[in-house]
Image (cartoon, rainbow, N blue to C red; front, side, top):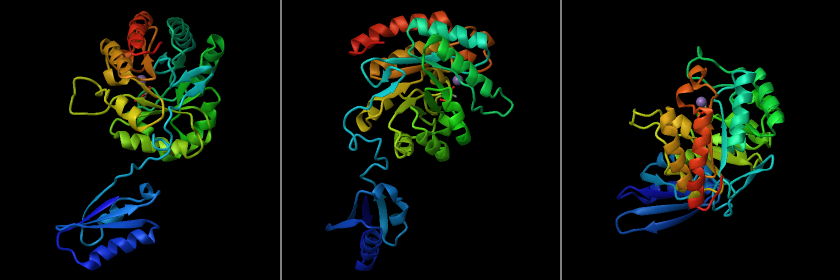
Length: 338
Ligand code: PEP
Ligand code: MN
């Protein structure tokens, strides 16, 4: 951390910063410039201390971090890529892993039809929400335990791993009973109790980016999972809120190379929740694969017109199969396969 002192401060103010840093177990280096004094605060645990700790001290003009607040998710901590293995499927390897299925599990017939078709088209993981985090309490909240049972059934019948969301920190074991990958949704990215419990479960986790979160906040949230000794963390970019209102969320494709640069964790993209409309999903999915993602999370429904949740952004079974075909050549062009 770099503490820049205001112009003309006295020895007392500088000493105040030095003493505070030392009391917290840091080392300090002083840079006595002709104009200003800069105090460098050094130590492995500066990420645990807020910049405000120094910003409030008399004579301090600004405080800047040089170390990132996240550690375990960073490339400095682990330089080689992490590969998460789920029921024989590797996420973070050469294959672009497609996870597909309905937004919400609605019925046995709907889920089985979707599962069979997405597997046939080449999806490696089945998605389906049993517990839905809805903006309104009056919207369909998911089939809950019945939904988990259906997911477990589809998993058995089609021999395909399942990803599903857990919204309540108390439900982690329950959801882990049916899911191969526990999804933490955008709205819960900073639900730290949930993150800690999901971390403790030692189950692979799909951590979505909060739609108002920076990449740094997202990777710091991943540290909550990793801090519990759970190394099987997959990140998922799903679009962020910007001033643009012609789409549901702005897909931040930029986060793909940025996350790859700063983190060793595998990263997938969810084009469906960004697009908000089925017609936009293919282009976003292709852009993500071209940018170098390790996988995609795509909403697919046997009959989107009848969907209880997110029908407008869901692909039909045949549109999904066609998209998979189109993605194959893009994957090949960037040295991957689907
Ligand atoms: C979902 O995947 O169904 C979902 C609710 O996504 P998000 O958390 O990204 O909104
Ligand atoms: Mn959805």
